Image (cartoon, rainbow, N blue to C red; front, side, top):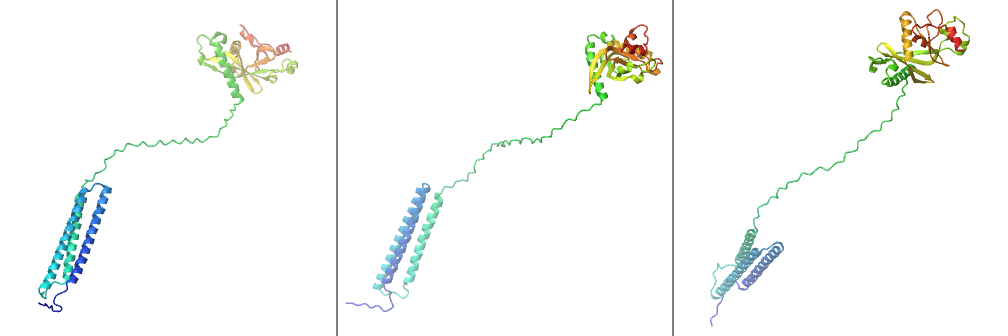
Length: 343
């Protein structure tokens, strides 16, 4: 029987190598499970976000490669360990045999290489699996012209102006008298358009050229003065306004017609027209013109129709009916005779 003796401290025991291999297997299995979990998680993400059969296959292949490499490393490591144990038991191990720390470093380097290979494979396949989509710019949308919203125009703010009271037109008595004379002339011209001869217009007279002369006041003598009158008494102090006027209507330079205006209260009323009075006044003015200092006065008796006249500048007081002036040889009447006839 042959006995072999091993010097103390010469050959390391095989039990520590078995423990190292066990830890290496557990580490590799943990890496495989981690990689399998990552591959499964990627598979679930592709199922949720789109088809990824190519990527899943790639990851599965990478996992298979990792498993194969792991098995290879394990087998290699196991065989190396067995061979080392057999050699150690068969023959003496030289002094420079690998220590357990060097084996551990080799196993860790193998694990890191496998992990790096798996990670790079997964990255490359993931990038290759994603389709390169060119950025698409959104189509230019032609914005239709937007009509501005109709803004209602504010109603114009009109300030109510206070109603201005019209000023009362105040006319003097002379103005109102003139206005009444113009109205009387218009009325007369309206009638003269049909009968021009009846109102003193000749064939050559034009209505548009007719003008209104100055008013001629009409006087009267009161009844008491008439009753007390004495022969030769001057008449001028006895003449009183009769609230009546006559306006000569002139066609050119001669009087065609006379229109009358009367006063009642504060009103001036247009009255009748007279061609005969106009003819008598033409003769009176011709016989006793104002250029010689004469101022004929018209006189009326309210109880007797018609007009009379007097020439105050004559030495003998006189009152004559205007009808006398239509005669071929007119003459003046004494004042006492006419006033006696009015009693």
